Length: 429
Ligand code: HAM
Image 1 (cartoon, helix red, strand yellow):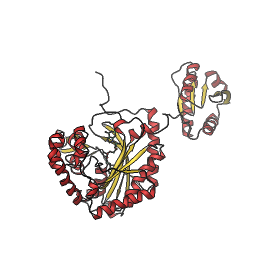
Image 2: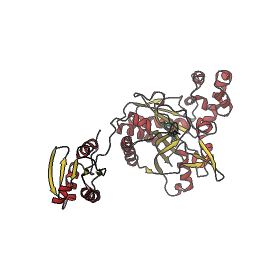
Image 3: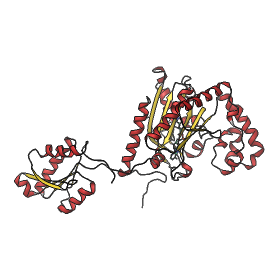
Image 4: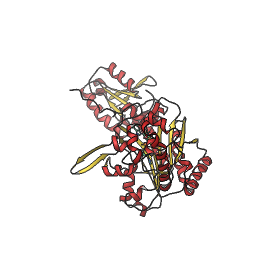
């Protein structure tokens, strides 16, 4: 039987992992510069959490969650990070400890979507959630954080789409306006949207079905229905975005696929690269009612998440891999025993070492050392062992020399580390 990875779930092999580390490191640095600290929440949460927070009529909850029962509990493998972070915030009464909380996370999410380039069933998100600040300044700073991050990693071609969904009263008026728009055109909608019309007409706006796009084209704009408080907030967000010089477009058709949003919504779309229809690099918005909805106090919140596979597709830079500082090539039993010990001593001194213990010929070991990009190849022949020496071949400078076995670890470590801090070099292979 041939066993393969689950469809839509990818292995990330070592030569690719280096770029993941780079992306993750850049995100950690960027988030921490903005005052965010990392949170790690479980991969499994009660199904009820997502159903309640993301919305019964959303695609994710209706069709895409990996849910099952175990020990009498209904569980779901997280499709996103926001609901879990909010649950943790309430569960640990974080509001009582600090007025503003900034959390970031990196991790795998799971959605049973139809796999395509940039759309997977297990994918990774980098996200931020901020609890406790209701003001428009914080919305603009959050959006600018994403824009700044993309620039930091060398992704320059993107545009930020922004919209406001208003607060509950505004959305109720919008719901009625949408009902009035769609009801006479019901027959032209997809089956899913016909079903959602009464329950949640907003979802029709982000349907992926072309029939729904056609009917939605001249749907009313929510920005015309904002009440005074929503309008003041929205104007404030746009003013701060202008102050920050963020490149944005106002997009009244942006509703996003989750029910928890209030007021400001945003999405960042790539304007070049080959992501096709999966060009949305990240998105988020305010969700001022979630914390109270989870039984906590009334605490406003805003956040976003980015898809890491999509970012990696656009991030410049080759795949690369750590190179060993020393490659040890023993040529006999005595040399092999000595190499075992030497490798251990070198690693303790901070040098990365690869020991070839297969007992092959020198020529093939040198070829392997070269292929790995090792700085030094150390040859330990039995004859040399008898004389109390070993040979070092500097693979970059193409010179060979003999040094005493006594104290060899220190000499080798100095050489390897002087050419590459960390004991190995990084670079394109
Ligand atoms: P989302 O729009 O569902 O929002 O996902 C955010 C990003 O994750 C997307 O823009 C996309 O880049 C990536 N993504 C989503 N689904 C997939 C997939 N199947 N394959 C690859 N990448 C994918 C959220 O998840 C919200 N929790 C964001 C948020 C945080 N809102 C407030 N706080």
